[in-house]
Image 1 (cartoon, rainbow, N blue to C red):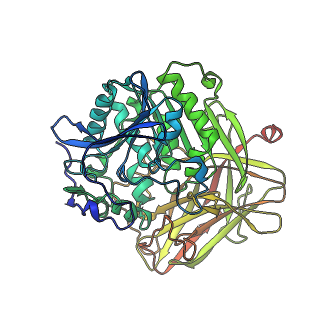
Image 2 (cartoon, rainbow, N blue to C red):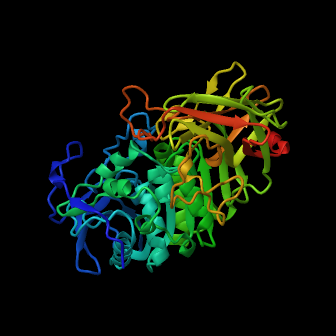
Image 3 (cartoon, rainbow, N blue to C red):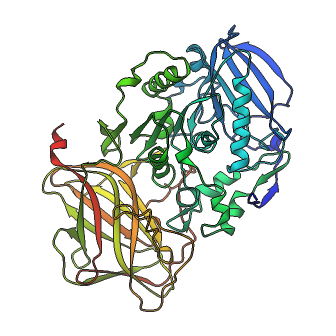
Length: 555
């Protein structure tokens, strides 16, 4: 029996305060920008519900057109008009006025012989039925749409999928169902673990981007899943979260997967994990460090998308055979990085090194320190541990930090950690962060102490994975070890530069004043009183880092 989430009445789709006016659901066909455009095509689903799609194809094309599908809840009418979020880095010259949000530009792809379908899912905008936020209902609906698209008289019978965020997540969901026409996948930064990456970072509720994203899916003539209410009602992993599980191992289609080091707190972790777990025999992974929307639309990225789709959807010879299985950018700072080919992820040659934390000196190094402790105000305090590099170093991969902690004044504690790069002058070095910002961290991690129980089958020393199925509150005076996952990263340090570990009781990075851009925050913590961190002696607090052998630094 399928899980039944909390639902809510949809908001009037004609009343959205910021999107373009919603046109009626009447079918229309016209020609412009070198395209034949069919608006409000009705796609029948298996239960008789009809959803709406806009179809674009090269003008005059009547047969053998490969088709790219953009499936998302943001409204097929809400075209970008070449304008993206401020500070996103997207050059308006890269887009046509017909580009859907986070999806493929029909004009650009039409020039290369492709059609594009932009679909409003069940219950979104004017499409029939109730909107279900991922899960098996949306997977089956998307599969039905793919089958319908593959039967269009002008199609070559092959459908590919491409897009960012929601348009990536749906690919993980529908691909295991193996709809016949689905020929190739291009998920560009999409989380794959609803609980750990979208809603509860380390068991701590995300309170900024999450409610904003949930508000974006309320526009319907019928009902929509009330994602915020469901998430708040299910603070531990249970049947609700399992209804969002992905069968990534069942994915068999060729896949070109793209992640970004900059998407700490949203898509980074899950994109890499989706690629790793996919059953596809032919799959590629790129991990860049740039602003995600700009990277998706930049000419070099589009050229790679075209090569990938041409190979699988048109049987054309392309450079795909020469692609490395993995490409990464090794970052030095915002806008400065070196691209490198790799054979696998994580890198097999990584040397995992443990640096012991010393509360007395605020340092971390190879020699075990004497026992000491440090205290900070739980609600807004922080402490730092520094490691000065005597020679150049690269750290690339998954990392973790073990802390011995005690809460004085509370029965729980929410821990926030960040890795920073500090230059030789003692100033923080900024990295691209969360699609807009240029002064972000190297990496982030989070954990609620009562959620410290690990999943022993999935955890590794460098990548602790927590169960999140129950809570174990702290007793007065109880000091416990916690292991915190630090999301993956790649950073290079010169001799004389410093890696800084920050441990805090609140978000270490905040939205800039006046910037109303999407941003991850955690404003409902359990922190009160004082946090105590113990190191040295019996308290083996330490960070575990994936250090790449020094010979790589001269390549």
